[in-house]
Length: 284
Image (cartoon, rainbow, N blue to C red):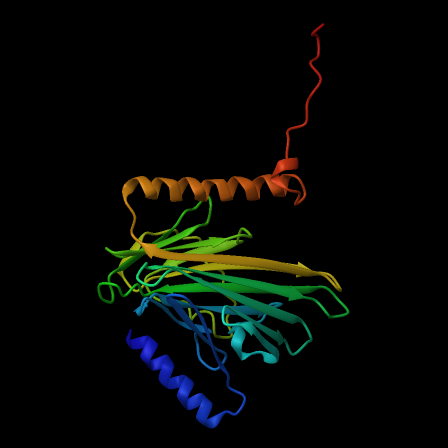
């Protein structure tokens, strides 16, 4: 919670001295989320029934250069069509365009549940191929029973991340399989905002208790006019009974198998993904 208050102070100061600094709020039923381009965490607060659930941020790297937070890029446009959706579009110094879309879905008041979807699209407007990397991190601060009591891990097969304390849990689902991932006891900001290229180390945990972070990395090579899109879906709720945990785990495997099936079939729907029948040699 201390970090959240420091970030709030940073937003105030940025708004005082930088006329370009912007802060956006989304809300739906029991959920309230805040975003900014002027501080380290783009999504710096997520309140569910008044309890903090942590924040997330995006970083990028272009070519062989170092890593930077995405919010440091030039903001081309901002759009908030309603209280649940926010679209931010950035450009790099060389002309690549990055669009980030957030969608918040809350639950009924008093029912500790909320969903946040983050979609990132990278488009190459350069007259040559573009090597681009997107990093995403979630810092778990499930403050239902206090701070510094969270644990986190990543399933090495599905790449789905899990964070929890004794009362609440968070699930992160990367719809596009990341090239690398990592779970660590602190946050990724020092390593992902410097001049040294970073590769996440594929550690799956568990780590904690503390304030752990879950991170993903996607490496892209885009030709002229090409684009690539990725989505991270987050769900937060009350720690369920063991039988419900089994349903969540099996649901994660269903997501994984669907993604694997779509890759084998060139991105087609899983309904079209059928094994090719082979001739039965020697059988009359």
